[in-house]
Length: 188
Length: 425
Image (cartoon, rainbow over all chains, first blue to last red; front, side):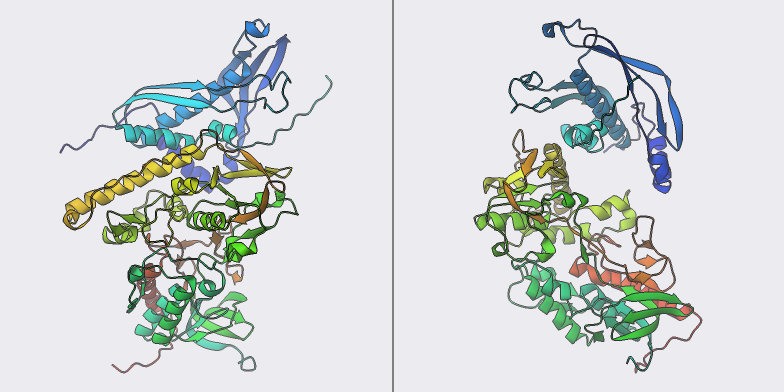
């Protein structure tokens, strides 16, 4: 029997995450974050979203730089297709969140990842958004995520990492549980 | 007693259930003068706050307290609530435990030399207090319960006795641990349809390789695992009770419930406009439970192999993965469809009468494996207090012995001479 001494490196600073967990459990108010985005309508179905600042650890924080995301609708919807549809951005967010979790959990379990590829598919009946059939909801019928993972681990260990990632994922929670949404307006 | 002012004694044990009585026995063995204050009769919760068909999750042969074990003719059976109460009552008699019944403690305060314990039937001044009121004092009902429409009756498992209590029509059972799965089956069997809202849960076979699962957990030492060995003790203490029932040989898992026609839904996430909303994460929770079950079975198999048990036990078994609908229900109407909501959402301890600054910001009792952070105050019988078996009847002895030793040491080293009963050597 060989004793495994190699330390996996998935580029996740687990010590820092565990330190943060310990520190924030002592100071729960610092754990209160606020995430923000702005969105500027450009033309038609084309908008440009920007994320830059957020609140957390008791103060205002900023990203290293602002990030922008164009959203639009495809040409089959008679749009100009200047960007991903907003529902596709939701799928991107889900995969991004779950994959971050996969890396962190694998690191914590000292499992070296070689490649992680998520494929996300979400059926939707657009009779809902077109108002054709009031029985059909606007959103997805369901979401299917498939992970192709190459790692120094058994299939069971990989399944456990992906399961644990879902358990700790913010976007997975946002999509699987109801959230109260309040939209207000003002005249510029 | 009221006219005489407080009685003085070394130790007051609050609660005469299995934990309190185990501690009483340990104290008696060391000749420590003590009293057990019980709000009702011995084993009150077991007698008065459990449903009719309840069976203990541990087999009779494992039901034991210090110096005392089950000795009847059904070692592989599972006791009913009344039988557990009788077992504990016999133990109280057998140990001549100094129980004061019908003495609800209404307040405990710290005094210069110890504690003042207040009851409507008289007060006690003591040097040490043992909290043995258990983990199941107050039903936990989630905040979302406020959203249940007034015309839909709701009750907690603590007040549930049998299906006859319930209106006809569909019942939403909230909670997929031991209580929830058992009640869901019995209510479905009564002719009422059941929807079961399942959150994080622990799947476990009743019998594995021909032996009760509790035999495996005890013999392999898993139940002796100490809390200090856990990476995340807080999480370990929150692990829900396994999906076990008291039917010999029957695995009460979600596959069985589904095959019996029970509708499975995800965790109850909210109630809005009379509509119960279920989380869409059911499949992942089932996957997590399946993976965890398999890891447990692998560990048990390895243990059996290593210690030469493989010859006298049946072959290795694995269980079909949990199947849920591709698109489980995400909502159900309370009123039109659901006629009753039954909360199988657990319990929490109640120390509202303990007027000593020993609580965290969240209101939880702060202690180190049962030793509370003020001298002379101890707690017993909570989940994974010191060992994984801490809240089981058979787990009371080891904890009571260790905490009893700590308590004894405390009494000996504290300034005032102990008020010992003189034992003839």
